[in-house]
Image 1 (tube, helix red, strand yellow):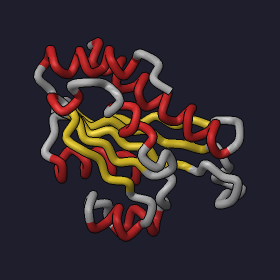
Image 2 (cartoon, helix red, strand yellow):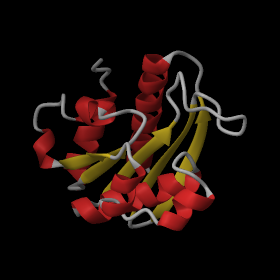
Image 3 (cartoon, helix red, strand yellow):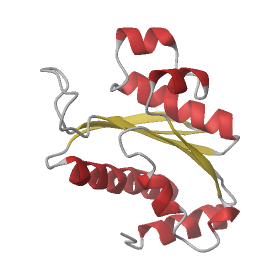
Image 4 (cartoon, one colour):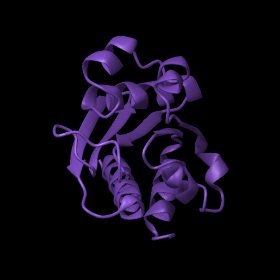
Length: 158
């Protein structure tokens, strides 16, 4: 599972003295597991919220009920608020979030299995990327965690 990107991210976070908090839904803690596989991660990794339910998204991460009602939990709007909520509730420099449909159920015509939104919040602002991954549940979770870590790494290279 450990690919090396986690170590490079940790080195960049440590060097820049930045902290990160993560909000995960469809990945169920996989990103956090990968981040905490790096020795010394307590220097920059503050924690995570695995927010599978809308209630946790609202109560812990501050996602607005109107966002969930109007756009759904699998939306860029929700991912953006999850990333901002992770940053705020965990008191970190960076918030990273992922929400999507890992399948095999839960899909709709507008939101197919494999639809994933990944957002990153920092002092510079918040951005979100949309993905459509193929594969079974575990492959979608892995691809989602890979994409999230790549987004984080690219941000840290700026």
